[in-house]
Image (cartoon, rainbow, N blue to C red; front, side, top):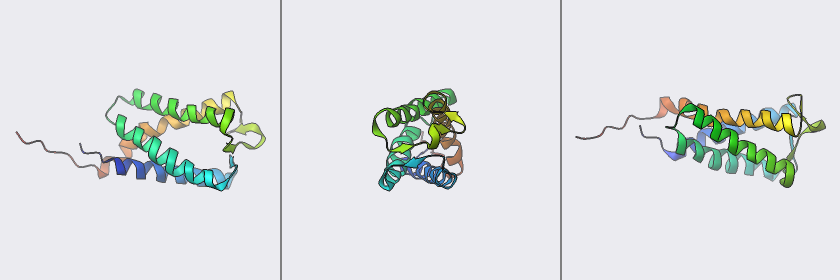
Length: 132
């Protein structure tokens, strides 16, 4: 199957935009500077996670989940420990305390992005025909 990188980048950035809109409206987390939101959607969701999804799309679902869990979890830990680009009101996310339970839950959520992206793109993917 032909899976263009651009479609993954667009799909995952669009998903990220939706996720961040819901998070903003429900005050699940807050960005220290609005510019970080653009970096998060375009840079991390689109380029990093979209590129990861493209690269591992044909891997076993467990591998795809673990890759998203690892990359997304690493970003959450890096932000909490050093970057400070976003924060969680009352140091809680989804009712779980930050850092350990909350960041672990977020890492699990990140794992679903590479797991589901190839499925979401199926209607838009052409079968490639190999000539004999």
